[in-house]
Image 1 (cartoon, rainbow over the protein chains, first blue to last red):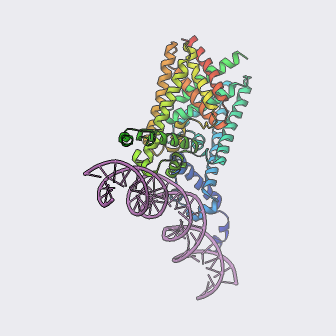
Image 2: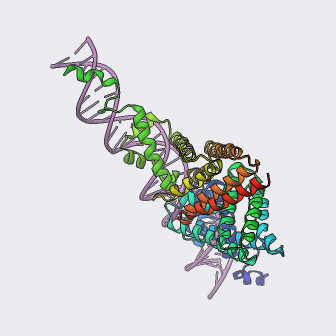
Image 3: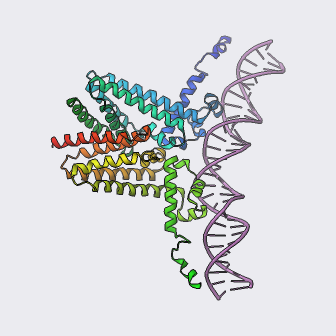
Length: 202
Length: 202
DNA sequence: GATTGCAGAGAACGAGCGTTCTCTGGTTGC
DNA sequence: GCAACCAGAGAACGCTCGTTCTCTGCAATC
């Protein structure tokens, strides 16, 4: 049995390595921050929710601020992937654009949906944390740029993308506050009108 | 000089009465909460900003939560008035609807604009404070109902109002995050298309 | 003019925050 | 078998929070 302990330096199942722990910590932090707001969650609550000791948490991350930052960056990755996947299922350029609002609709229907984490974080921390404000800004900017590539596919004029982005943002906050997924469908219907209008005036 | 001190029970300039103090406290609280988030402002900061002692603040309001609530209700009143005033300047129903987006544009241009206080508060506190969530919900609901009366004026189908509301919400968050007033104009242009489309398919 | 009452300033309080430190117990290497 | 080390649990630290209390001094009343 001597050779069992030997390879413990590699990440075995009994002692998950730092990367796996970091992942677990970020998952718990994301869930808690999203549900209660960043300042509504203390490090002790994150410790008990993740099962990771405070000492280890502070070896995995230098500070709570760093965890907030990583959570937001993780959300950005997941959002980008989710949108891209939904879009990729469609072939026709117009349908690819509209797929975004269907993606929103299914997201809004999730039980713990509480709006866009970036908008929420910006409202809570944007005024006091330049780093958070910057991350949120770059996330939203990336989404608009992505929309621009999609609208370019159908040869729509450049003013269309910001309009479709505004619809998506509005749908997110309206759905969060009203607790309904309906805004996604309303935004989709509006998007169809805007797209067709932009194409006909091209 | 005996008669000078006699009428001090009435609110004289030397000793402003509670209502005026309450007003001043709410004004300071509104400014601070909006700029830094509710949890980013302590009662001590509110005391020094308003010039009202803690003891007096707690005689004017039972708790910080009550101040938050009153600030939001005050914002609701000001928003309702501001929108109604902007709308009232126009005669034609279509222009009355679009006046809302002009109102947004001038609001977004204010130096300390940091988005919709209700959306911000919902993101920060909506998950932990049912009272805040309820106030935000009823504020947004009131706005949609108001939009419905305006869209009814032009005989538009009922699906138009929620779409215009989504545009307004999206413009607010997009303007806050991007730091630009442009989303108001983009939303206005989109609203024109949606209105004309809704009217032509009536 | 002595007394009562009240307002203001800020210290104090208990709780909770983010962060660090101490202690304990088990594992590793010789 | 023993010394050296390391990880985990959670106590402790310094701070800030919302809220209350104490102390001081002034002003009104008989």
